[in-house]
Image (cartoon, rainbow, N blue to C red; front, side):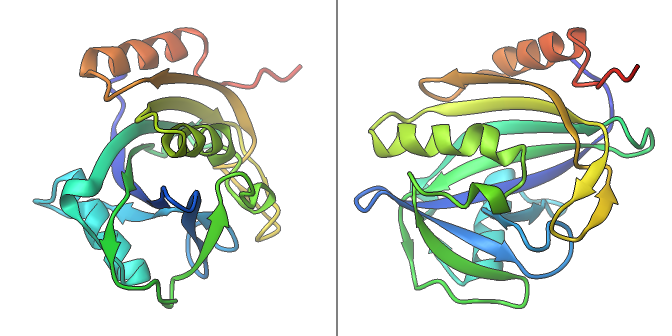
Length: 205
């Protein structure tokens, strides 16, 4: 498994199983502006990923996810080859199926409900579109699946900001699905296979 340094983040998805809908947020400022995504951010010192996800959801939407109904459902490893000094992004993915409160717009995010079959894919991170539709459909169909996704970026234009970004230009990725939670050994094997296949480096002639 890679020994590269990483930044740890969380991503939490409030999923209404009965109505088959997901709460996403339009990012209003900062990294990922003008894109829909789940809620999340950096893990604070002393926090577990689970606690960090609960905190970020409340800060960005005012929802209080029920801790016992907030499930670990995946890991994402993002690496850019356009900036060798950039750290890998390791993202812990959670699905929350119960919460209290109503979503409220904040200065950072504007929450909006979407049917899981009608996600705003054109206004999402290209990496996210590779796994989120499949994960959500599995859950609303009663399968508590988990996902692992490793992907490399080679730099490209961000159509939202009209600026070049090291986190665009998606190269090769490797995705794996599990019926339940995965083991650390299974995740390490996925990362190892992805790196042996080139870690998403785009070969230019």
